[in-house]
Image 1 (cartoon, rainbow, N blue to C red):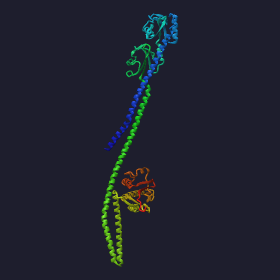
Image 2 (cartoon, rainbow, N blue to C red; image 1 turned 180 degrees about the vertical axis):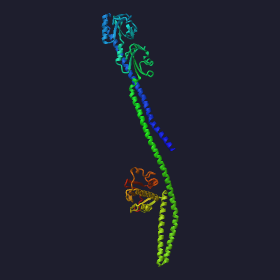
Image 3 (tube, rainbow, N blue to C red; image 1 turned 180 degrees about the horizontal axis):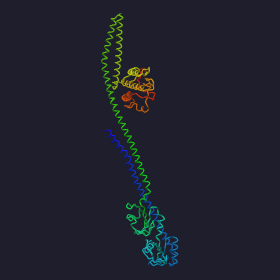
Image 4 (cartoon, one colour; image 1 turned 45 degrees about the horizontal axis):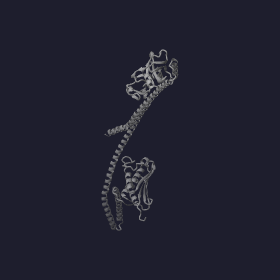
Length: 558
């Protein structure tokens, strides 16, 4: 069941780590890509609009110049004879290429003068809409028309005054002029057309001339003349400008692959960024998931270890209660034995008096007295042991009183004296001669000192380099209001990484089954409740010194 839970946690955590950064990144890139795409599209349309505007301005400027040249001729005519007309034609051709002939037409449409190719004989100058517009507006530009022999031409006309009467000076333009004009400024992948409202292509950047194909542009083009747009149906971008002459239209067309080629590298960069980011997020999620799984397993192991330590601590607490019960029960027969021992001493005294001068009997009495004395010593020893056990068991009951350390510390040392001797440890004690009194619970202070002494004995026992075990306990005043109790050993010391955890509950460096890891943690809390300080100094490989600093009770003489 635990493996299934761990697998589910791992899977859910991996998915969360994968989606948490990836979804915002995808949304950000998607939004940025959409905005960038619109920016590229708008930039491309603006570029096409600028191109259409520049072409329209160029064609308009050319037509304006041609009409201006016609206006400059006014005043040079005397009667429009052939010589005058030839002179005008030559002057116009020198200034502007593409003018094929000129004609002077009166308001009735009669040709008064003509100069041009002899084959035309002026018969193609038949008046049309251009004559009416020139007389009415002062100038006119016609569409492309087919003249004799099928050659296309465009009429530009200018109203002039001669002898007080209105005349129209017209010239024929070869549409090839406009074709060369748009072809000279064309760009790679971009098509430029000069078209009429009827869909006639006057000139194209691909050399088109007089093509009547309205379908050459998509239907959307004719509904949006004068603007720029992207036709999704045809996949082409259009921009157009209407000329001020003849209603001609300059149209620019560019297909999507060319239109969006500036964005290709950026799109490729975005795709690679998403791919690389996805790989990084995936690998990071995989690593973090493995790390979290490892930590979960470690915490699970620590929890199991903690449960085991709590179980052992409970068993130790039960053993402590049982030991206190045993000590209490042992005290009862000890009291009986002590009473009997006192009675035996009274009997021995009576036997001495009865023996009188009988040396043999007195020797027997003294031998019996020695045995009774030994019984008394052992009874007192058992009483001290049971008293210590009961005092230790009552440590939870706070009974604060003045404790003179000069007397208290030797009593505590007697409880570990046998253990020190069995481990062949040199125990040195140095207690200041001055009277040192602290106000504490003696049971709790005894518990702290016993724990520190037992830890020192264990630390010295771990030495493997042949050194003789050495433990020293010192008790001396520190300043005028404190007492310092130090317990130093020459064991293996505490490593730097373990020094941070030394007072952590259930932390122990002892082998499994040898300690609960609660001793120093409990001692730290007990000393803190005495308004004291428990701390240590340790050098790995050389030993440790644990010290207790407690408030000192001023002596009456002070």
